[in-house]
Length: 503
Ligand SMILES: Cc1cc2nc3c(=O)[nH]c(=O)nc-3n(C[C@H](O)[C@H](O)[C@H](O)COP(=O)(O)OP(=O)(O)OC[C@H]3O[C@@H](n4cnc5c(N)ncnc54)[C@H](O)[C@@H]3O)c2cc1C
Image (tube, rainbow, N blue to C red; front, side, top):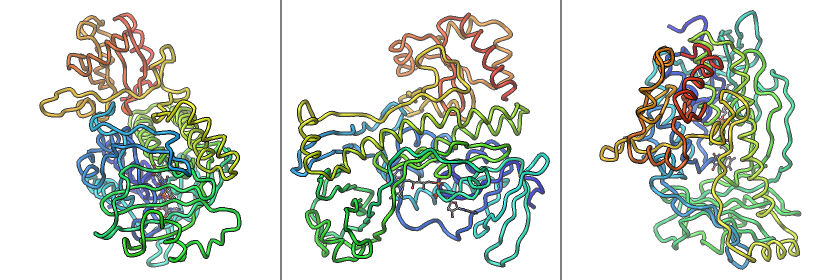
């Protein structure tokens, strides 16, 4: 039996909605997921996620099935000019990066969404209704009423939830109801996305991603997983979109790599890549997440990653407000923290887009000369700080993601397995003993997991960063840094003030 009032209704069952459903399910909330489509969108879109995102999946109990459908990308991304010279490299990955896993993974989006949906089945209080389209949304009294169309029977009904999260994609209805404008970060460019399945007779293709920065026709090549390969091909002035997606044209465009007998076409479609962020992610009981809140050109493979980070940021705040009576102003910190973080990634994607999308031969020559002068330059993903929110801004590390060191190398046990969905204090063992009874009581009351930094990798991080203790939030961002027991006690006092009775 479904409750008459759900804690949270999630509109849209793509990666954002399905990740949030897993997290809220784990936290014991009653959740209704409404999705208009019958099945997972079957064609490939996202193909890359990063190590921080794998950690979110790990905390949701889904690392093993995610590893089974993905491959670590060891070799990074090469930006080559028309002559094949490398201008710029996004660094590859080690098997065990700062997040306790690889830094980059490649995957087929429908398979990833299937893992997320299987995960949701663990939680009986999470109700999923596919082929149910939300047609109207109204905030009434202390809840939200949703009008829903059951597409199979064509009947309409109303459901109620305390909060609604619009994970309903780029054309979000929730965003329209919320009435927000969008901040335009400047890039809107049509690209052809061409996916193939290689046959056994295919020639060897690069393992790494290649940004082929040829001003005559900018293109991206990606090794996805198994025999799946992708080319993203920029539309040039004068291109006829109808012609571009015809098999003859497609094979001609990739003829430098493969011939028609080497692969079967999976699909070819033209997408316009956008770079936008909604000005408002929350109004009252309505919130936005994923593509509904922001869209980025996929040059860094970060659109879905941002959606997953949204879910991780929002889940513990919804728990605090709905299950532990915290003031709902806490939910305002969701946008204030996440929007600048998303902005940093989109800015970099737009900047890389400017490099890749150069079509003026003269400008391309100048670009090549600049990069070749002292190159190739190697860069990592940015690790931006959160915007202002639930963290104490008195140390450069506060507001940053904390790494996932091994706690027990012999059993491959990482920190996150100990912390699960809790706040944590990680400290010099002596400091943990030196705090007063009030601090200990506060930690107990707030179910703060106490971790002495004795494990080798953990200890090394504290020595390297010259700090004595950190307080972590359930999403692994650093709430605050302490250098002695006094600091730690003070930080603990501030922490429940910010998130009073969070647990
Ligand atoms: C070519 C391409 C390449 C990409 N590559 C990458 C990459 O490598 N890495 C990466 O991180 N990201 C990438 N992305 C972006 C990524 O695919 C998206 O960011 C991600 O799918 C967004 O997830 P979402 O859940 O927010 O939205 P969506 O996946 O769009 O899901 C929204 C869901 O809401 C449902 N819905 C909408 N309205 C309603 C309604 N009224 N009622 C009920 N249901 C509704 C829709 O049917 C849909 O299922 C790429 C995108 C493209 C197009």
